[in-house]
Amino acid sequence: MVSTLTKEGSTAIAVQADVSIESDVVRLFETVDEQLGSVGALVNNAAIVLPQMRVEDMQASRINQILSTNITSAFLCCREAVKRMSFLHGGQGGSIVNVSSAASRIGAAGEYVDYAASKGAIDTLTKGLSLEVAAEGLIEKSPVIAKESIFKDSVPIFKISKMIPVLIAVETLPKSIP
Image (cartoon, rainbow, N blue to C red; front, side, top):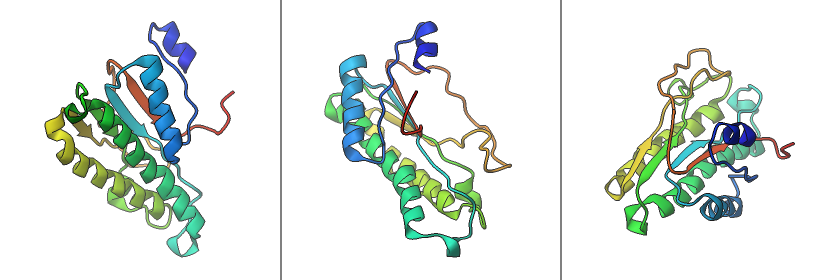
C-alpha cells in the first residue's frame, strides 16, 4: 500500500501496531508526528469478526478479543487524535471517522452479536465524542462500511476521497507484514 501511494505522489509510511494495546497506539501516533507532521484526520477501521455462533456458545476470551480490538482500539486512537487535533491542545482541528456497521442496528442474531454490540459501542463513542469536541475544531462521523462481507444488507453511504495534511488509517492487518 505504501509503495502504491508513493507512486501516486503521496507521502506514506507503514507502522506496525496492535491498536488494542495502549503503548502501540502512543508509538503509532508519535511516529506519525515525527515522520509526517500534524495529524489532520483519523479513520478508525480496526475491527475483527470471529466465526459465526450463538451467544450461549461464546467464551469470555472471544468476547474480550472482539471488544478489545473493536472498541478499545477506537477509544485509544480517538484519544491520541484529539490530543493532536483539538484547538484545546493547540491543534488545527480535523476529522475523525469511526467506521461502524449496519450490524449495530440489526443485531446479527445467531451470527455475530458480539461484533454487532461492538459496533453499537462505536456509534455511542462517535456521538459522545462529537458532542465533547465539537467546539474544539473536530468533526466526528460514523458511516456504515460499504459491502461488508459478513452482512448482505450493508449499504455504502460514504466515500473518502482526500484528507489533508495527514490521514491515519487504522485497519486490522496480519501480525507480520511481508
